Image 1 (cartoon, rainbow, N blue to C red):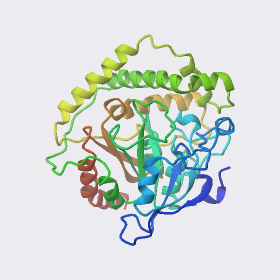
Image 2 (cartoon, rainbow, N blue to C red; image 1 turned 90 degrees about the horizontal axis):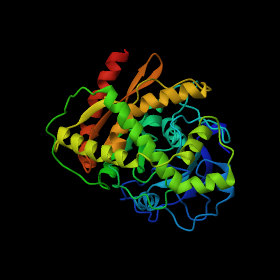
Image 3 (tube, one colour; image 1 turned 180 degrees about the vertical axis):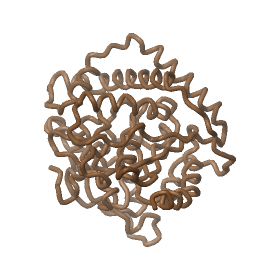
Image 4 (spheres, rainbow, N blue to C red; image 1 turned 30 degrees about the horizontal axis):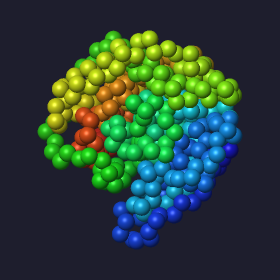
Length: 367
C-alpha cells in the first residue's frame, strides 16, 4: 500500500545494493526507484493491479535495465505506484491511493509512471525508472515539474518489463537535474554534433489521425498480451481504466494494416523533416494537470487531446525529453525536444547545453 509519508509514491520499499562499492562508479551514492512493472528477483511484479499481483508468482530474475543502474553504483530503494496495467496517463489509483503531486497537491500526478515521477519531484530519490508507451513518462514528468526522457524505441532493453504494447514500449528515465543525463547518454546511441533547432507548425487534424492510429495499435497489442488474462480473471479496475481495458479486449484488427502504414509513412516523413541534426520543439502536454477526482469522461477528453502531441514520438519511435519550465498560475509548465531515432545522446547533449539558460529565463519570467 502506498504511504502518505512518502507522498504515496511507493508500493513497497526494499534495498538493492550496487554490485560493486567502487567510489569511481558514475552513479555512486545515488538512489533510484522503479515502477512496479520491472521484474526484481524474489518480488512479485504487480503491474499496478492487486488481482495481477495475486495471480502471478515472484520474478526469478531482475530486468537488465535495473541491473545496469545497479552496476553503475546506484542503490534501488523500492517499487513505485503505477496506473493499472499501464493503461492510463492520469495517475489516480482506486486500489493503492493516488501519489501526491509535489508541484500541485490538488492535481493529478500523471501516469502511468505516477509514483516514479512523484518520488523524483518530491526529492525522495535522485532519479527513477518508468516506462513510456503512449506518454507514461512524459506526462507525469510534465505534471510533476521534472525532466522525463523517452528514449528511441528499442534503445533500452525491455526484457524483464511487463509489456503493454511492444511496438511502442520504452524504458524511460526521470530526473530532477539535467546533469544526471550524463549517465544515460553513455547507455544509448550517440551523435556528437548540433546544427540547429527546426521550427515547424503542426497540423492538428493530422495529429488526431496519428493518435487514433497509435491508440488502435496499442489496443490490439495489449489484447494479444493480456486479453485472455483480463477475460478469465475479470479484475476489479478503477473508473476510466476499466472502460479503456475492456475496449481493448473487444477490439478487432480490421484496420491494422492501415495503421501500420500510417506508422511507417509518418516515421519516414518526420525523419526527412528533421534530418540528421534537427530538433522538434513542442509542448509536452496541451493543458495543465486536471484536478483530482475530475469526472472520468472529462479526463478521457483531456487524454485524447494530449495524445495528439504524445503520438509524435510514440508512432515514430523517436526520442523525446520533457523539460520543466517552472510554474504558471501555480501549475507546472513543460516543453519537449524531440530528435530522430537513434539520436538519444545528441538530444541529451542539447538538453544539457540549453537547460541552464532555460532555467535562468524561467526565473526571470517568474520574477
